Image 1 (cartoon, one colour):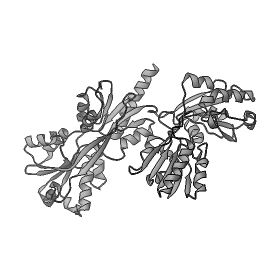
Image 2 (spheres, one colour):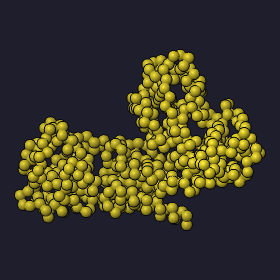
Image 3 (cartoon, helix red, strand yellow):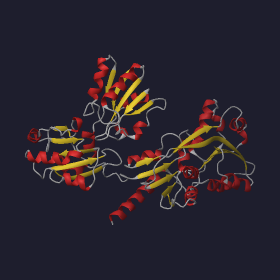
Image 4 (cartoon, rainbow, N blue to C red):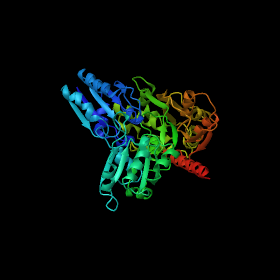
Length: 498
């Protein structure tokens, strides 16, 4: 039994602390705020109860005293309770209030600090909140008072300190804040900045002065959550802006990938600043039970001259089975290895093995054509791949009179998450099967405007068959797909600027 206040940070899931992540993953119940990002909420285990206690300006569906009572009630049931709050729990997060009832009732609690947007949001906008040449102090002020009253701010004291001022939750009062600063003697041309949705793919930054900031907010419809930063340090924003220069910032990209777990493609795209939507959740089921075709094939491994893989998943399933079955790898010493795709080849190399053949094109037909020229008369192939895989490979081999055993070592299925397609810039597909799975899940409509980036020609053909605007990466690699998406984003940006 314990209650843990966890600061979720300002939005970027990478800024959640390791301790915070561990507490979330071990929770029985999680009470969370509206500014906690989806990627952090996804860390909550399925078995845990999830309670949305988020507040909107002027609207508190779950009153604060009810939140306090829920924390107490859940803890008294002997549960591990996490109170998940945006930013830091103790910085305008009412964390101190939420501990009062727990302390009165002898409930053990823990506080895991979070990275505050007051500092992280400024950093992601290229603004160092202190600098020896500009400001030696930082002052964090709330622009939102209790019971929606006007905030009581001593502007004269703040101006007199000559430090950096960061106002949180102050967008609704920005006119009053700027006027109050100027009335206290702050020059109207003092640099100032607005940072909306700080540290996220939707971050927007506006640079101005104390005299112009209110109009900038109005003209650009700046909404909460947003920071107001006032001070000489704002002059450094353009020079030090690293996050705003990410090439895919503000873009939305669908990634439909064929493998379960974290996607390398998704991670690379997120590093470049975009929001990644993953509507498909792949499930891989190994077909390696006792008396399965793979076990039978391995009992006569000496009959084969070639071992053929068509995916990285197949490589992993195959070698995982060898390990579990305590199969001596030296039994493979006489086999030559063939595969499709650079990513599949990388998986083979991880096992200390180098492929003897990989076609330049990323498809089974190219692999089959290459093998027909390499396989000698009387040699037999062991093809280890997915159940219901494409027939191009086996059809061409059979027509060429090459002997093979096509062994299904895993089956693949897809779950579907509902997403909105209204603001999607690109869709990235890593196989033809992901195109078909995506189309089964997508709402009916015209996909002619969807720019589909495909890893190879076979995948591209599947996307074209559904009317998509198709682009193929220069190579069948994740990095080549990322480069193609960057090129397209750059061309779109140029067109928008033109």
